[in-house]
Length: 261
Image 1 (cartoon, rainbow, N blue to C red):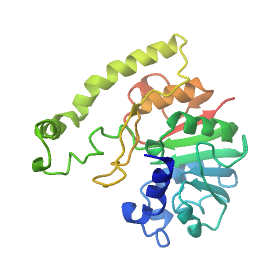
Image 2 (cartoon, rainbow, N blue to C red):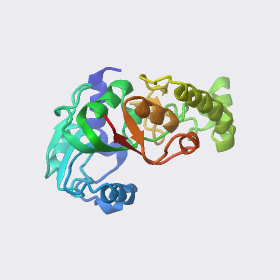
Image 3 (tube, one colour):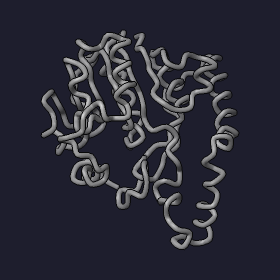
């Protein structure tokens, strides 16, 4: 899959894939509206320079006065009344330390070059700035092939076994059996001085041909605990899930950071 194909998926076919009426959808109808409003109010961001990464149709552009949006889709520009720039490649088209706050919602699970995209947050944010980071956490390994929704008759023996296993593998208890030992080990390493300069995550194979289910097009399976350790290793402080117990137990939802340096 080339960058051109990736861009085409999120540009030419975005409306069809995500079924949004971008011209009519209001911020208040978005599932993250209340969370984002609380973030803006709590950290007094209404009059600050804010960037939304993966801003789609600009649903949130009127929630702050000094708003900038960026996305890969050129077709989204028509929905903006405020500055919007198309991201082309791994570097976002803004100056270093330009923003007081950055938010990104359901985006970073779709970015092929995850490490580079995370470093862009660090580059663009001023010291003392805030981040609301909310990808779709822990996207399922089987989403790309649509195992959860396709009939058993679509698969051979191995595929049938994979589909049958989802009933167990998708349960919180089952996933916790594997997640918590890994989290505990990585957190102990962090406490002892190890810095996670590279983000720990699982690379997925996205499906850009058939959108079987939510996150069939996801590139990354990201554990929020690993994201916390990455940001903490790069000069941020986690405000929403401070180390150590709350970070260890994080499951879903947005994570909020303060850039210290």
